[in-house]
Length: 284
Image 1 (cartoon, rainbow, N blue to C red):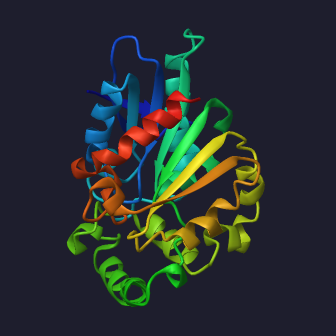
Image 2: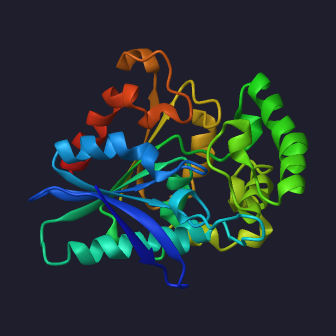
């Protein structure tokens, strides 16, 4: 594994990790979930190497190794995680493989990572994509108890935390890396809509942007993923109107797992899920 720093189009430094092997058959770009640092994906990345793929991960600006010393006062547009940070990684990987005619670039998106593909200005560089846990974020798709928990989070706990420290202190709730205030505000706003940011009048251009991606996508969601149920997935994935989308419902017991949830797709215990992903990329 090699750590590097990339400079985005708007001159922001972001940290990436490269998991590279000799003579790879293709490369995978792994776009992570909101508040999940790139080191969480190391087990999957190593497994990708074992299957003949290079794998590249990143920490979006304000997260993990791309975070400043303090998030207080650190301004971030949530969409720039894709339009700037991930776009820079796609460009970097594209340049890395430019001399290899048969070397394709594939994409794995976890939760927000499934949103991010459609936001990219350079989607034409992605041959095929596999999403895990991508949904619209609206609590109305969640089971009743989980919906209540999420409503308390957005309306009570999060405002108190953000008002106290100046950013979303996600780590104090044991739910991941801390988030810049701007990311929290936009995320909270979009989660009030059944179709996420597509229903936000200020994001009226996004549906047209999503229609530009025309490659194959598999969108897989665990049936015990309370934050991204199949109905939530369908509401969001409809925006990829020109892509060849295949929806998959994952039952944990079919893979010998007790549970998967929203984060567990990439935990070491969930490695039984991964061969299907590599097989899908091999087929393309």
